Picture 1 (cartoon, rainbow, N blue to C red):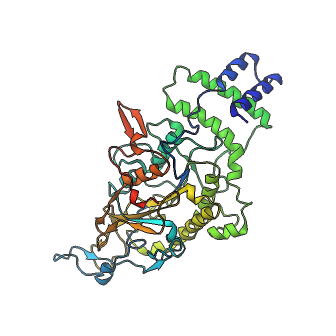
Picture 2: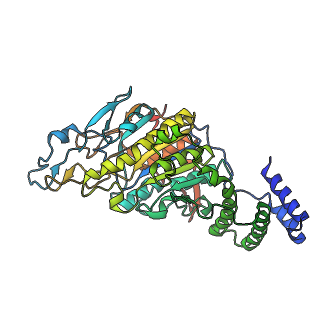
Length: 457
């Protein structure tokens, strides 16, 4: 049924029941057809992907220890890098094995994910624009390492809207804040309605998720009156996107009270599905929970779903300066859930329309200041990421680092290339997704970026 008709019918019913003042009736009816900033919008061309699930590993995952084997470092472990002996080679702490028909090598840290490599295009030539956590984190998300810019999820919400008006277009499941904080899902100069909605794992992932009014009808009348007063206050202040977004948030929040409890209720998921993700029943805080919820949100029309593993606490993220051994626990936390997510999407026929992205802000360096140092430093010159589903050429490796894992050797992929490719799979020409701000047209990829067409099926 047409949503405008439904709303107009409800308003008339409320008026008939005396729940809306007669003097407000005509204005409420007239306002019921206003433009919706999150309504679905057509892409520039036929897309391969309807949605994105973006897996972000906070802290900088070591490419050398996960997805990019370096025999040279193994052979020369602890040998001096130069005559001055100011640095030494450090080998990967885990062995590698080939997986699938493609034979892609993956570290033993990821046995389950390794089993999914026939679905994955592994990029071993990523390069970020900054080597510190804050700059690299906002770089991979916003395309800028130095200035506030909208997040990729906000750009996609702005460009495509949401397929389900009962849920936001952009949702972020984050138990803690990453190094760049809420800027990771911020909308900056885009209308604030496109900012990501943060979900915090736990028994109540969204505050006030359940109705407090005595009845749905009473709540509807309250919301209509509130909406009228808000719109009256907005008149003459239309350029205040934060005010407009707050009004829109009330509308979305009301609809989420109907849709969100169902989306986060995993009780109906089978025991087999729980086992696939490695999720214990009743668990609402693990990364496995995040992954299963992501699939449920994807089913319900959310455009961009980001899952964040870790926060800015060095003891709970991938920033292994002190000891690489923390990777055993970190990898175990995400390996089976991510593999389960890919299997689940594929089994439901959703992977062909869902782009799954795995990335981090940078890698870790191949050199250490002294032999025996157990950790690794930041390394943005080259690292690894991967994509799967939605027209991506699975079972392939693109790009190459040098024998040390220090520099890009072949087919560099910048963060702007990465972003342009994600947008392309959604049917968006990255050069044409722009927003006028401060006298110029801005875009996610700034003045850079080329679609990496070699990885497209």
